[in-house]
Length: 596
Ligand SMILES: Nc1ccn([C@@H]2O[C@H](COP(=O)(O)O)[C@@H](O)[C@H]2O)c(=O)n1
Image (tube, rainbow, N blue to C red; front, side, top):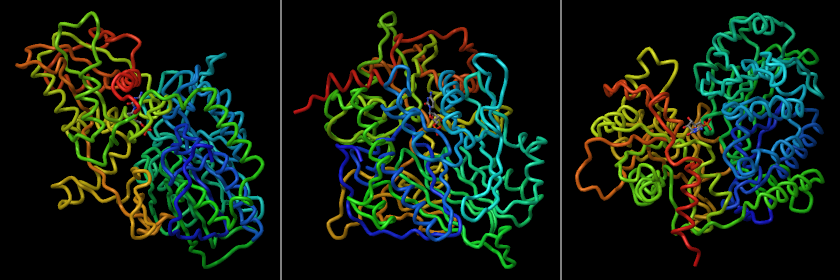
């Protein structure tokens, strides 16, 4: 772990149940390779994970079993270790490559920016040659301009000890926010292509492995499941899922399961399958047994599951990689303190609006006091921010350079359109926040869903809110299938049961390795707004409609619904040039949150 990482708290744990084939899975790590430096439950780093995988491999191989390591993308954007170097990510790929990963895929975040996808093609794919799969992404090669697959579409391989024959794919969900140097083909079209149909015709297969940056419960994975089942009615299929930032497990039939392993290096997913029929060991009965576990990413869990301790656990490589992370963090000055947060500010642990909601704070403090374009000083404005642009809670205490990247990593500009009737801006806000269903039924249904404006785990909170009438009234949900954060060391006095993930999934409520008490999650809107200046006594007739540029495609639709004829491409201009949300937050912290 990193030198400043808090020690994990001893807690009651459920064991791993090993099988013939075992998997470790990460997804949506978003640069958090140092682990969580303010939360003991998730305080192990990538070096510890390397040691953990090494020991587990030794342990299962000693029993004649196999272990595969999977990563399903969104390794970038979301932490100072990636976002605060210039260019971004100069340390990250070098650190990640030290983990042996058997199947690795791309997420949507690898494709938002031209440089990120090129770096994927020119660095990460070669680093994981033979393991990186890309079934539905093509890229215009930066030198030849030729459209080429980002990586091989699929592979067939056999496991080291048992020779289990696996056909593996690597998918991305139907993403359309990529920069125009990449092409993401919808999954439903990809599975009609000859290469995919040929791959699934193979009769010499013991297991299909579908790794992807695709939610476990999703139309895309359903489609792949159906396509494989049309040809192989009984061959086991193991899906590895991501993107929604939640712990989740989907059961498609008795031989096809999907595991999603959370976000931000909080969770190491574990999966085992026993009773596979293989060419070496054909079995006739065979309904294989699938077991899943969501491991809290900390050394207490790692020691427990490997049966090792402080002195026997660290491997040479693991220690070296932890050191590389420390050095990178130092070089990037990630511990530089901008100020001290006087209290916790939560994304979804409190309702919105609320004095402890990060969104209320942004509206009433940060945007209200700092969002001003010099050339538009005298003009009132309505500023719109998508809640998904904010990625993490703020914890009471030191707010560092790292915190700024963690809270708001994106390089989104502010833009504005002038002379928009104030009333219309409120209609627009209504559409962005409330009219999702109408928009989804419209002809643009495939293109945009307003829920993309919110943070990914909110889709899960919304799902549970809709299915739980009682809780709906208060919008309070106990932590069920979802993600969300444990408030640091909020330890209960009675037992060592600390708040955290209490996952409910298709296999029940016993998936988490750590027995936690639940925490709450509230729904928040897709977008929030601030009227500037805030001391206006009466509502202005017209305003500058200011927005973060990620919102623009959604605004185009919402403005149409509100009866406005705005050509956002032509009529909008940059507001506060060279300023991002992260800059505003940093300025606010420096000016207002002094450390005692
Ligand atoms: N420039 C960006 C990019 C993304 N977002 C928000 O993040 C969501 C996607 O997050 P995942 O980690 O699940 O891929 C997206 O839907 C937006 O809400 C953003 O605000 N700005």
